Amino acid sequence: MSKGEELAGILLKGSVTDAWDYIEKYNHLSNLEIYQDIITPAMIYVGQLWENFEITVADEHLASGVCDFILARLASKYKSKSEDHDAPKAMFLCLEGEQHNVGLKMTASLFEEKKWDVKFFGANLPVQYALKAAKEWEPDVIGLSVSIATHLPKLKEYTEVFTYLPKKPTILVGGRLTSMYNLQTFAANNPLIITNLYELNEWISNYQMEGRTNAIN
Amino acid sequence: MQLIDFELPLPFLKANNTGQIISYSYQAEEIFDLSQGVLLNLIDEGSIKKFENARAIAGKNMCFEANLKTKTSQITLFDVYITWDHEHNAYMQFAVKEKDNERLFEKLQELQNRLAATDFELYEKKEMLERTLLRLDELSGPFIPLSNSIAYIPLFGDITQEKISIISERCYHAVSNGEYSLNLIDVTSVGYIYDDGVLKLKEMIKGLRLITGGEVKLIGMSPKHTPIFHKYNFESIVETNHSLSKVLNMSVS
Image (cartoon, rainbow over all chains, first blue to last red; front, side, top):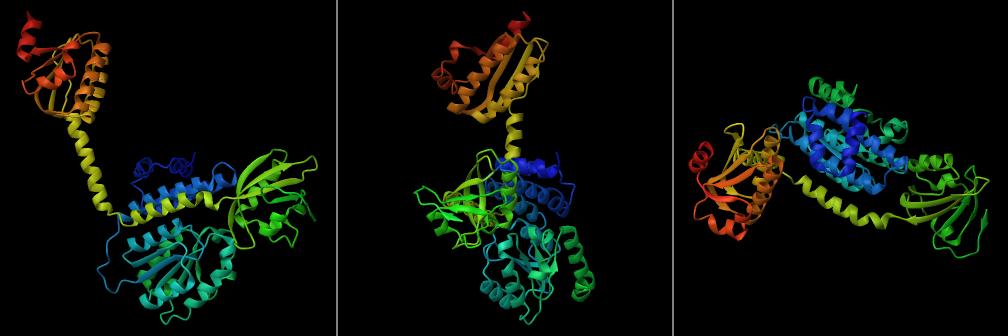
């Protein structure tokens, strides 16, 4: 049984203590490794169990609730309010109607680890609120998550409105659909599609080392 | 595609093996957009595989969850009840499930909001404190073999149920690895005794007697402890009127 399958079994039992004890066994790994190699496969496996008639949506929600706890605790290991007023800023949100925000949380956490100033808006943020927040806060990066195909048409709307922002933030798009569709065709202005967290982590490091322009290239 | 004209408790569709809708009920027409006449058009992308899986095991009556597109919503969770005939036509009825789960999701959302406000530094300190308290309980009743046949268990601090549970577990394990005919539980250094603690202690004494087949004596009892031990009738299961030196002298002589 893979680590993802083991963790999925524990998440579905609903015990935050057992789930945390399991994660603690891998405390020699970085959060990045735990996110990509243990938690992501676990949540994918939970989805597969639903597809195979083995669990219900209520079970899935229970698993993601327990997973939320693990993520919050893992993130808190490195979380500290950035003292640097010039720290780059990143905001994260799910498109309207989207409830799946586990991936987005892991993404936001990686930015926080690298001392970015982060705002996490979570699930289901309508485009007008997202735009208002971005206008006021002026982030360098906006991360969007989309997991349900019926929400794809909205991706164009979101990616388009952000291009009118004076600061021209880099738009990142992630979520379950990145491996299933060519999301560039559903988005405006060529956003960066994130298919895995190692890739993202490297992108953040490049951004910080070489500056915004090189990171995009 | 044919409208069937009888009352059913839930929306109904009949589709053939290729997913063409053959017949439907009034209720189905009210909820779903059936203009294309194709089942696939009603299914959310994330649920298509479930229908394919269901078709693969056609012949088996089943109920499963699936997200479907309705006239008013792009995605709604339904329970799909499905049966098959010999030509692999599927007979389906659909029960909306969103409402059933609503309360659960609200509760979960509340918990997630609380989680967002959790100070994990404090949480971890609390956990550390709990571990320390557990360790203290473990250390409050060491198991000391005085000889091959005499075990000595001095208890320290207040007697609580949690503490005696931890101590008794360790003592049962220790006595089962030896042959102790005399087990001395010393309460000289005990402070306050809680009712649930004394009941657990009674259980522990019975347990030790059963495992060792030997004698258990409660020693070092002070006048302040007498009422509670008397209240729980300890005299009936254990000797209580001795000090450590007296018991040791007796066992030597």
